[in-house]
Image (cartoon, rainbow, N blue to C red; front, top):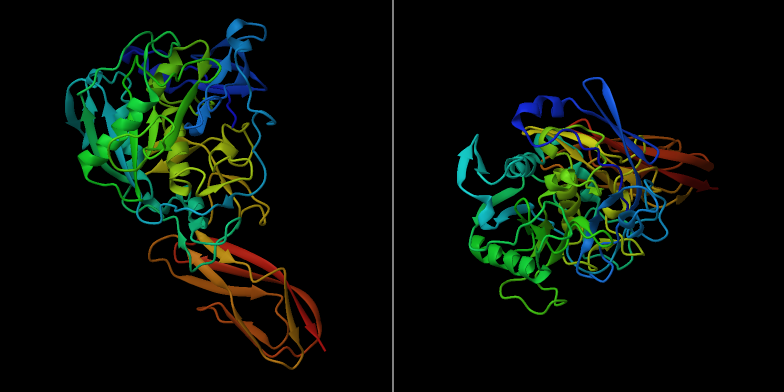
Length: 474
């Protein structure tokens, strides 16, 4: 897991929101600067990331805080970079399937605004808003989750290549397996303000602020599942804490984080009352912008009111819950890194680096996710991925001249209702592909080897291809 620069654009004030919105945030190496109104201000260097899982094995897929300051400072020296990782680069090697489920049905996200400090709840523009939400984080999250899947966006398509119920250790899925579902009509399933608890408050994003415990957060997720009456595998609960609170030590220099996910059946703390459901612990991310010690996003994309880290953290945990809802049972690499961990806060310009995801409900910063199928099957971080999943027939297909061949290119398209068409280059003379079914058939008339490339396009103009050698013996 890695972290990178979070440039602080503006402060909490409606009077300067227009200035904040026009901030240009840049990263140069490990230094940061903020330019606004033509004036540049040098900032401290980024010296490392925290290790949020150190001593906290329940913080699955945790997004670490990124430490600001200068080498040699007490705060900086408390940071411990994730072992064996090059800062700002992806964690290589494919995701592997373990044995458990993925979220193969329509994803359902329930937002839980936990704590009396959220204040009075009203409705604005169809979203629930709260008087104790100075940066509008609630509305922003609701818009993000409500818009996922709109317009055929393909950031959500990467998860579709991962599935359940296959051989342990597999790196790809046959089209017949139950894949992670593409969201339709958004994923926001409910909003609940639970004011029955008043978390301790203190300086925002300060390690000195008293905190709610991990067990309390876990129990709140179970309470939410009871409140909404949904404990199915495709549900996930996001417990969002109010500003000025410290959920489970998120601002601690050595082990701090921007978010993590887990499940209420994890018995690290003991047993909570209620159903076993996946959940995310999401602090009040805009508070990180007020800290001179750490940040929670690269800040490459300038948004007003310190919201640029919110959907990066929320999207990270959402995606990891899709592919590994009950941790260590779904998809992760051999070292335990999940789909978001492998692509955290990449250096600008790298594939999968932070991008702005345009939805019908607005534009939101998100990170890339790891794809086993991209980069010609070598894997890598991507911000967008073809929704077409092709099962490779193998590196080599053998045939005999004068003897009929018949096999089918198996395809799965994660977009609901999509239809596909097939074409191929390099097939031996006498062999052709059915454009509607992907069936490759015929009788080879000449011997020799050729490189065959099959291209699949769908009704939404997405495309994917697969290549293999076809050797015809005499």
